[in-house]
Length: 163
Image (tube, rainbow, N blue to C red; front, side, top):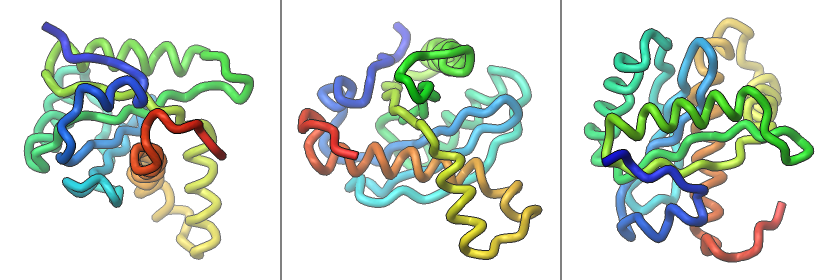
């Protein structure tokens, strides 16, 4: 039975009250990975996984989730600014379906609009060199995505979304 794949606000009903979440920023060449604490207050970057094959990528993500005793994945869904879904969102949904066949952990989808751009601005403002930014941007973007989801959960997943 494949894992559940649901928007965050629907996935929360299927999660235990406590337990770490693993945030994922899916790119074409890498996957940024972040993790939360068990109380789901703070997201921190974990690593950047160089993409190889689906099975190798999934095995690494599942291993990271197991190391942190995670209860779910939060996968950034790249929605267009107008709210529509383009090829990147379709690719992300396909990745979620494939990952769901290999794990029992639910996969919560979370709107990641502008996450990488926001993180890039923060790293530039912190005077992080271009080479260092290239090495850490994906895991920072994953932490940004996951923190947004954690903040939403802290407000109450069914509360109206406020930007």
